[in-house]
Amino acid sequence: MLDLTATWFGYLALAIFFVAYVLVIFEETTQLRKSKPVLMAAGLIWALIGMAYAAAGMGDKAEEAAQHVIMEYGELFLFLLVAITYVNTLEERRVFDVLRVKLTGKKLSYRNLFWLTGTLAFFLSGVLDNLTTALVMGAVVLAIGRDSATFVAIGFINIVVAANAGGAFSPFGDITTLMVWQKDKVTFFEFFVLFVPSLVNWLVPAVIMQLGIPHKTPAAHTEAVRTKPGARGVIVFFALTIATAVSFRNFLHLPPAMGMMLGLGYLQVWSYFLQRKGARLGNDDMVLNSFKQIERVEWDTLLFFFGIIFAVGGLGVMGYLAMASQFLYVDLGATTANVAVGLLSAVVDNIPVMFAVLTMDPAMSHGQWLLVTLTAGVGGSLLSIGSAAGVALMGQAPGQYTFSSHLKWSWAIALGYAASIAAHLVINSALF
Image 1 (cartoon, rainbow, N blue to C red):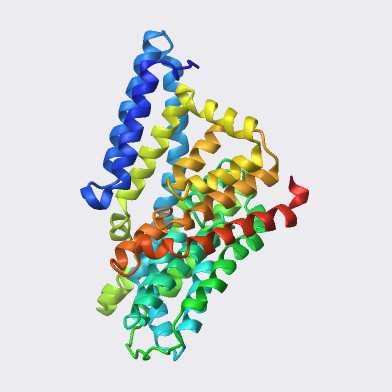
Image 2 (image 1 turned 60 degrees about the horizontal axis):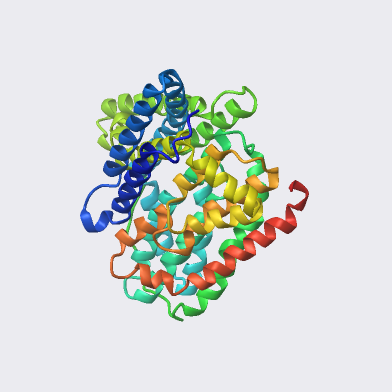
């Protein structure tokens, strides 16, 4: 491969990436959806690569590198497409609405609700992913705490930390853990050795933040909501889809995305029976159009992933990731580098950071790969802009949950970050 790091091709590519990322950071100000600048950046960076390699008579090498990145993104895309479709279907069947009403109907104090929503966020994020979990639990906190801005602010911070921590010990909990699993750096069941460090990451700041929760009990809500027919079947098939994806990887040695696509087939067949039965009984609530749920997929997010993965992959082809790998993992050492990766993910989205690490592919022990999985997953909790969960909740409660309200408790979250790393180094020392 050509080293383009000291050429005008490389310098221009870095400038393009920097400008695109600045536009992503200021998405709310510019109203420019985040996928648009990174799609432009990815295309321009690869155009520069194509020009450089064509000039050197090595066009086939550039094509080979591009096809490799396409394959990596294709697996991620198919996996996420199915997962998001199932989540959309659960929402359409009112499963999340029922959960929200059940929680808001209980006569619990703000402090009890703080712990209940945090616990649910921690465990649900391992299945639903941290972004979806944060949005669902955020709706609960808003419904409960509409008379207490303090509870909403601290409750949202608690959900962000819990969802990110809970997503770190499951391959389905975050995009970064999914990427690590698909690259065979960590097997499915090995993720669960991060359970205790992840739990520590949430519990340390939660114990501190609960002191700021008002000593009051909100008024109970008595709203009546029922799931639509077929909701239990969707839940069962979602669980079966996850089991299928795991089995494809562990027993058949096939990409988990293929197992997820089989799971999409389960949903399609189930929706067919519901549609037939609903039409026969004249029950519109029973009718489920699974294609409508695919249409509702957040395409801005999926295209953003495409742009980021191709832009970072392009910088890797140019040689910049090899330079970064030398500095981080050789000069600084793996532990320091992996801790720094987590801190960087608080400012830069953890997806490009983790993709960069996987592209560098430094020679590390199993314990170190688990460490970077942990830090990249939970490091984003340090700032409200550090994770998709935090950004989404800022939009859900503007004026109540803000960058500054989160920053007030960043010191407590940092204590949890340090404690989780220490817990991993001690509990999983045999893996280093």
